[in-house]
Image (cartoon, rainbow, N blue to C red; front, side):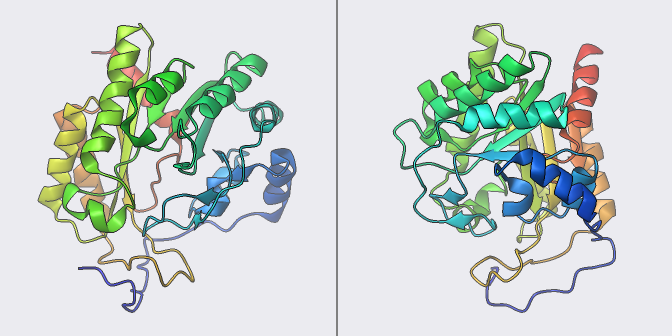
Length: 301
């Protein structure tokens, strides 16, 4: 069992984070115009790399989450009402950054009757309106398993529908707050089936973290379950405990790069269209490249 009060393990040499260039930070921050990013809220280790390339993962629906997952640095609390201007602000930032591929995620909004699905659709529509050529990846919550809410987002026509399982089934209850493995699999299955029924070229994606107490065999089992649910792209990365957050889970172990490489090869062998697997991999890291690789593999049969 992981104990959040246990001493923090020293990070090994392969966990190296690129420092953020201040000029890049200023440029991206100015362009964002007050929009939240998961890069900042989640203390992503890749912020220096991504912001240095003028890319960012936008976070919509506020910066307070209605769930208190024990791995996440985003603040738990009562959210503010939705900002009706946010879709337009998001679209403007995407245009000013010159993005051809935009990744958008969100906090969980269990306080809303539709879990924020209408706001999601409005955000996607707004980006498409200012940039019809812009490809969009959405990283959503579970919408409490609601088919109607999932369909609303899918019908807004994002290129990628992502929903992370975060960890293996055995550890779900300890790692994720108010979430279930079977509900999350249902979300991914529904997204894929709705898109297929309506002829929409949607790609489904998920992600898991290592270092929380899982075994190699359990990770392989989880990969098979995700593949059976129709997931086409998978990201696998190292869990890193948020700084100055004693309420969060401690790292059980730092997984060596060679193990990530084995999982990458195994995943491609069993049928995933695209996999990113490495210590610093996060769901949205180099998402455009991974999507292109997956599409090329699918096209090749």
